[in-house]
Image 1 (cartoon, rainbow, N blue to C red):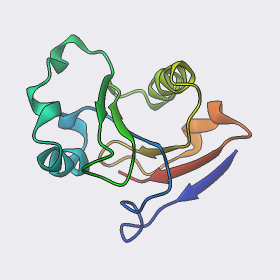
Image 2 (cartoon, one colour; image 1 turned 135 degrees about the horizontal axis):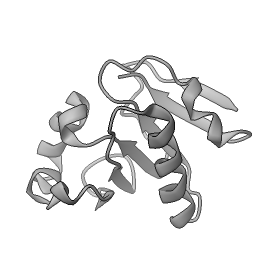
Image 3 (cartoon, rainbow, N blue to C red; image 1 turned 180 degrees about the vertical axis):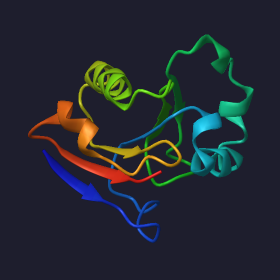
Image 4 (cartoon, helix red, strand yellow; image 1 turned 120 degrees about the horizontal axis):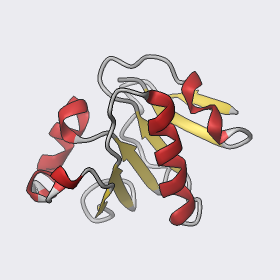
Amino acid sequence: MTVNILTPLHQFQAGDDLWIFPQLEKSLILKKMDWYLNFQLHNSNFQNQQPTYICSHKKLPTKAIVSVPFSGDIKAWSINIYKVWQNLNCPSFRIFLPDNIKNAHALEIFANKPINVVLG
């Protein structure tokens, strides 16, 4: 697994087709970004605990944002991300870890895939 940790200076630069986040309550970055997306995540029915997909190519330097619910288990979350990623035909992606998560090793399910990660 090749993990590229992005600094705050580079986290919002173009380069990946898909940006993956936990739900709004677990990501301060996503709360700020939701403003640029016209509060689509806030207004979506996210209480059903399903991944939420938002097209963002006209508002942010990525084609889409996916919010995958995080329940506290980083390993289970990475498996859910992997399933979403496969269903979307494996685009290039960037994972924004939940707030206060500083360990990208749990993303080992993506072995042999380059991963861009922003620490929580």
